[in-house]
Amino acid sequence: MTERPLVLVVDDDPDILDAICDILEGEGYRVARARHGLEALDRVAEEEPSIILLDLMMPVMDGLAFAQALRQRRNGAPRIPIVVISADGNPQKAASVGAQGYLAKPFDIDALLAQVTDMAGEPMHG
Amino acid sequence: MSAKNGTERTANQAAPADAEERSGYLGFVAHEVRNPLSTALWSAELLARMSAAERGGARGEKLTAMCLRSLGRVRQLVEDHFLCERLEVGGLPVRPEPISLRDALEHAAGHRPGDVGEVSLDGVEAALAVSADRALLERVLDALVAAAGREGEPVRVSARLDGGRAVLRVSGAEAGPGALDDPRKGAAGDPKGRALALPAARRAAAALGGGLSVEGGAFVLTLPGAGAYTARPASPPLP
Image (cartoon, rainbow over all chains, first blue to last red; front, side, top):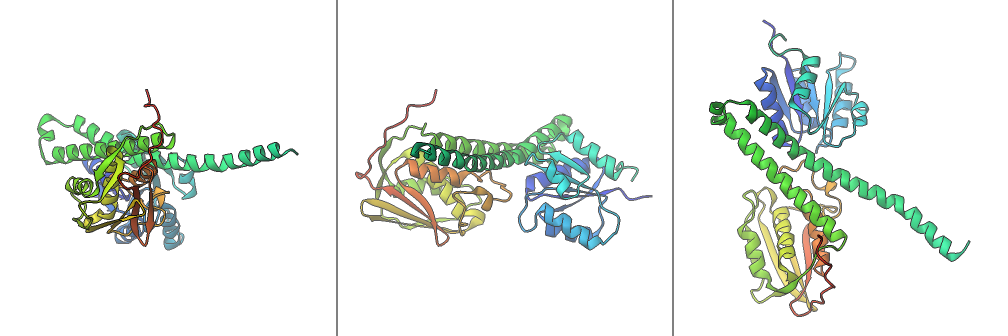
């Protein structure tokens, strides 16, 4: 049996992390969480996620720096899809980190699930 | 070119920079509000999707607490934002009265949030009084105690009279150099909704006829001593 897709959620706001992880776990996804880019790099090293939900404005290492560091570390390996989840209302920033998707907070739960399902697959059929 | 035209050109050249700064600030406010607004909406929606029995369970309780906490953050941010705006346009009436600084600080220490450290007022004489609008002074002191005492850091307060002005020093968690002017420098991720509290406190201190600054990692608040205050004309209240 194939393991359920793993979603890495990266955000410095603990309530945002809790809420998104609750939503995804409720749908049957596995989740990993990180509070900033540096932690996110560790999570990726532990287990490669099917998709990364990435905030941009974070302490220690922001979303842009994380995306650059991830590209360097993977050195030509297939890209992990990134969806930027941002409260700054500027979708152009998603392009600047090479993200495949953008969700402006506060986004609808169904919009989140649609993006995750589209890029990571159905949780029960991963 | 006339002198008048030269002046106009200078003013016009300054305007875009002001607009850019203002736009950046408002963008930051929007950013800060959207995070707790998101969690309030999501938790409410998840609760609405649950059965009554599920809502009474552990997950329901967690989501209810998250919703209330998030709304509290939104309220704090919105109140601080509108206080900033009203002070900026001079639309807030200021009603000074003599206030014991120690009493005001004890009030701030007494209802500080649970994550804020103990407050020591050993350096504040009981007789020291300032002339201030009580509501504005409370907002300033609440903000300083919360900022200096964040993450349980003990807060130490000292005060002295200097040439008719009270000088209050609040130390604890180190204050960033731009914390009063540019909240973006001090508040990446704001789980308490306090990102705008210090900018609001700085404006409130100015409206009280004093000032707020950061010196050596501590907050320094100056206020007119009781009897020395010259009230500025109060603006009429907004409709």
